[in-house]
Amino acid sequence: MRPTAIISWAIIAVIAIGLPVRMHLSQRTSGPGDHASGPDVQFQIQGRYALGAARTIPEHGPQMIRQVEEIAGRPEQKIAVAILAGEVMGADAAVSRLRAIGDPEAESIAQLYADPHSAMPAPEFAETHPWFFQLARLNHRPPLDPERTAVLAGADRAFRVMFIVFMSILFCCALGLALLLTGIILLATKGASFRTTAPAGPAHMYVEAVALYLLLYIGASIAISVLLPGASLLLRVVPLVAVVMFAASWPLIRGVSWADYTRDIGWHTGRGWFMEIGAGVLGYLASLPLLAVGFFISFGLMRLSGEQPTHPIINEFQRVSPWVLLLIVSVLAPLTEELMFRGVLVSHMRAGVGIFLCAAISGLIFAAIHPQGWVLIPVLGSMGFALAIIRQWRDSLIASITAHAIHNGIVVCIALALLR
View 1 (tube, rainbow, N blue to C red):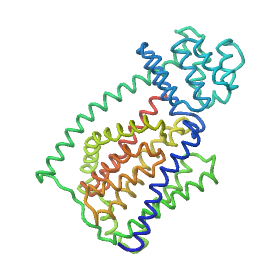
View 2: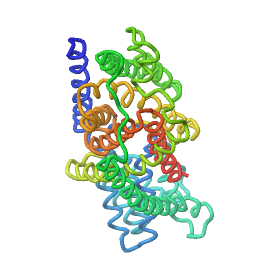
View 3: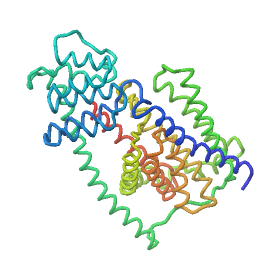
View 4: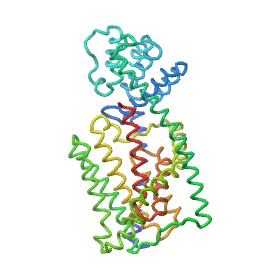
């Protein structure tokens, strides 16, 4: 292995280990939920679902409140839990919980329960948790009051959406398991095969590009947070996309020909657009059982550690247009991440390791650099593993980009439906 490749791998290893450790230490220092800022969208989704479940199955109401209470760390989250308790167990339960918090905003919300005609209190809470605030403000209204009914409809809709999602996941996982087993049988009987070959360009240049990408991406992220703290999401994303494109071009800058480069990283149409897109859809379905295993491992880690991971972009859901979110999450993210991880990184590794080890290593790195934290590494790693397998099955990046875009698009659409 060339010295530049050794140095590049050292940089990748330090970053892949350091980022989850840093996030873990930050969460331990700040406490549950303290690292969040602005509108607490993830907590609002969990609260809506809990109330919807409690309204649909009243006997489970107290249990649903306890589950949300377990993840409430900040004072405003505890205020929100108290408001949910008021909906499930009565206004007295809300008031007693609010006064036990010992926070001025909690006290003002408690006054709102005592006197619904008082001046609007807690403007900061109303901004960060608007749906919960409306629940408290309308607590004294009759059940059929149109305004109160509209607010409660958000909880009922969240429960229905999650029920439909759960049933759909079960069906798709069953279908995916059948496809996965079919694929394994075809591979074992030589009815199907992987299309990967060693890169035509010097392999070390590709790992140099990945190390360069990670260094520039971290540097650009820090610079944007310092220089453009109030910039729009799209404006903050554009420089990061430019960083990806520059780093991905590193082998070209170093002298690899365009023909060799596009062949190596899978930047071609393979057997045709429709064939590759269809393969991406089938590949995504077949990956669902792996994602389910990763999810259950991550869920177990969350229960053991008490950490509640989140992605910074989730708090942008009520700030920017849904179309902008879909553009960033379902178009730009799949294109750039597949280009770098399943294109450039896989091109380097398949020169020296097997297909499955290549997929495992690239998937682990892919998971580790995501900002959700170490507890989600199993589920994100299983996704990265599956995408690398799809890429090596088809050789073209179109299939893995399609699978990645489908996954991200589904997640965004579910979140938007829960927040309507």
